[in-house]
Length: 177
Image (cartoon, rainbow, N blue to C red; front, side):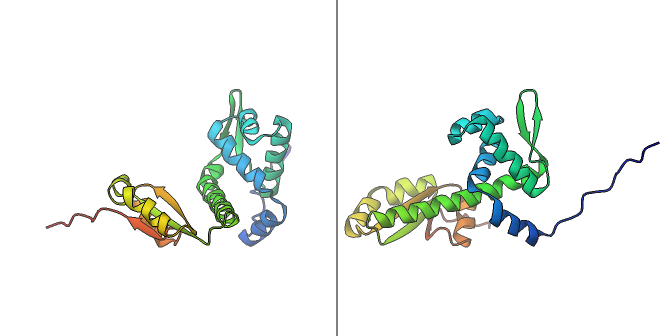
């Protein structure tokens, strides 16, 4: 009777994986993985990314080979993310969002801006506080650009703690008696 190999693949240290990712991963592959997971289809993800389906399939295969684990499960109606891919998606979205922030800073600098102010606010803060004040502020400070982020109180406070927002406009929390 032939023996079946039930051993797990050899573990790879995070530092080794990081070096592999930095050296050999293309940002396009990471963007593609997020699109595939969101759309459930390599074909649709390729269309959104402006790629052909064969090149998207190849890019996904290269990425899976690089990290050593399957990132999507293929089935008759498309693909779905594996559990490890689900764990990666928030990190990839955050990384791609940070890259988008870099592009914003560079674009505003090219337009002559000398600084960017990131303002986070709940919907009420945008209406009540920023409605009239923002245009007056920008008129007085034309060299600045303002990035406005609307989200929940908890998300905004988290981003403020991470230093990705300069100012946060929130309601004062109610106190318990």
